Image (tube, rainbow, N blue to C red; front, side, top):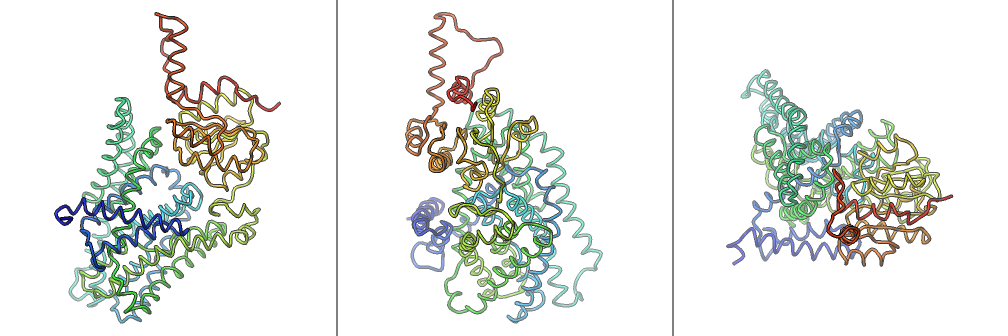
Length: 589
């Protein structure tokens, strides 16, 4: 019966197993990714029981890649990309070159031809976009220096991969027969030029046309007042741009989606777009890991253990080692260099594509393809463990960088932020529509103000006006709150709408500073109760404040609504602004 509905069967059984095994992994203090991969192994063709539709799973996984990279682009402006080009461009090229040479050496030991060794080296040199970005997001490092450099590194690898996929058949033929049966060098150069021209054309169109059309379209849809249409518009743009990039310009889905998100990030609606795509992004990202697990043949682990160890050495030792040395040579800190190096210590989707292409070109046999797949899955499993190991060495890393060690329970050492000198100050978490109005009220009341925002966008303009300190990062990261001098703060206002993340911040603030006044926002009664239990002294629910304001207008002048010309009162404004203007907490002094 399940085989009559392969899509439904895949979603029900695959996601169900992923949930169970991911929960078990979390309980064992292991990354849930391990559970998702094991779920894929269990529904794959190499284990007994239910066999999911592998081709269908891979297509759903592509949607996950698109949405994940689109989300990364939404938090990564063009300015950010240009800021890291001096590091990411040369370092990524050199790292790939050295990793390819190491892979070719391993291929020689395995008895592969020069073309087969080249294909193997290329497959082992390219990190998984999904694994790296997902790992950085879980550790809340996507907005750190390491996160920005890593994303730039991935972009360079993606561009190189596009060229490799076009040129590999030609290069393999040249290496195999010395070029006797191959087109002349001029044709090869023409092919390279054509590929580069397509990539440049795509990026130029997105920068010249997309930067105008996409924000205009989003604002038009937003003014319709339909949340459903807005969500649909965001998804249509993300998927449509990625599809056109792949089929019209030969660019990967991942790169196309990233550029679309980066262009959309310049719109004031980018944060809302990120919120609307988050649930789908997470669900399809899980399907990506399920599809990867389905590719593993457990017999590889038994019949070719030494060969598998050789591949893992290239992935887990050579690539991160080279990346670390290059970054240190370029003046990056120990923490940043180690974080990026460990993020690159895995391979994924592009390696599968290259292995499949090499198999089709008869560069190597099925057993080598299986080795690449097995090494990929094991590297993805080991990668979170490497970050946990890094955490154990955090005090030593901090000493090497010359910074004070952060608390032992802090998240990850990617951000070594100096602690602010402010005391008896107000900490505002979030600088969206609500946060901007609260910040204005606090400044007018004379509060020493520190704002924590995940992106550098609008909050930086506030800092330039003076009197406000800005910290870029995720407030749920203990390192960020340590830098905000939470222990000395008098007031903490959590103005972000995500109740789960807000709960983490509230609990952390209550534990670090029990005397601070903590104010949060909510949309439902259950959220109010949840945040209050975690330590919020005041929880403001938008809908309740709207009702109170409406009733206050109605009571003042029955029969004559006191609406001022040109005045608009929004739900989010009322939710926090009504309390902010009442001076519920007096500023210091």
